[in-house]
Length: 257
Length: 252
Image (tube, rainbow over all chains, first blue to last red; front, side, top):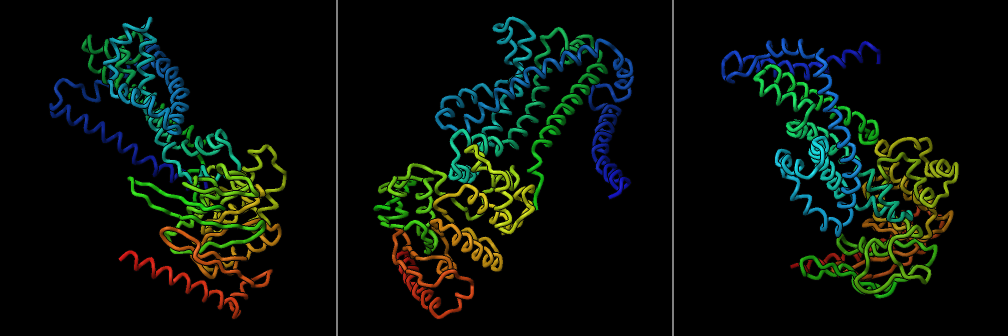
């Protein structure tokens, strides 16, 4: 296959996502022009705001702060959630002891945690990180559990009759077989961490969520939309990074003969 | 094997899958288990493998009671259970690797013995069904089990591949004389491979008849056209037909 053909295929692949984003902008523009969405600014004022905000150091600081609020808790959620999910999925007793409590806590919305973290945690940054942690933690744990439970028992038996011990079965079968689900959990968890971030940063002194809140209280609506779009784009990009990293590790799932 | 009974108890209703089977298998013997579907063939095999525990009774290997699965009893599954996230070579090396004694070149040796040299770096899903079964047998041989338990290993293969695999299996077996318990619903396959064909009854599973196969070894597929082979086949089929009829009548 020549280089030229590869490029053609890449361009064809790009057309649909570009069309999707363009369509969103067009619909947005049309709704604003038709006066159907109140005072919502259209694409033009937001672009004007963006030109002003993109070089703004305050915005840069907000983005960096938000990344910090996301990545530390996200890594922690992965480090805790994956082993916990494997234990819950693998051991029925552990499941019965732990899972019901998790299921009670899971549906609590991030905003409902705000007063609790303010009361309990000494600094607001810890509170914010706790809430983004929860956003990532639950999807990671649930997908890991589902991945472990869906393992075909014969794979486990196959390794047992090759002489595999309990820990070898977990290492050779349970973890690799659950990896595609764990990967999905990591992608979804990254998205939810960003969603929770905006709620959590309402109490923050820095970050994109706070930027949205400040823009709202000062009625600068184009700035709100700009920062919302930045959050969306960064959340999407972060999930894609996780997806890409995972696909590098999971090449066996893409092969078939 | 002493008075082995396995009772499944779904929703309080006792289903006796196999009932008081007494069976002795010699070391190095090739035994085929034949019977109608649902007769407990796989249950019996899973008990020998140690995957499930019999409700009553006990299975002994060399005088020692079985307690869970072990490397002395290797299983070939109906659809192969090669680990899809490992290459063929990694699969073959898995047993030795878990004991910490990988031998260089052993995987290659087994691949060429099974006639699939050069596939070591591929993933199992990249191979055809027949090649996957060869790779699974290679994985088992790498582990050097005393007993090979095979649960309809060739039933998903096309007729030609199946015949090739049967001859290949006999070649391997004649080389190191492992004990083989081979489950099938194909009477010809059972007779062609085995020293002894055990015919099982359905619901509850018992051994109805044992047929000693006195065909000369080494065998190739030409033996299936001899009069003696046909006699044995008639004998086995009549027992199975009788059994199938009884099973149908009891359902009515």
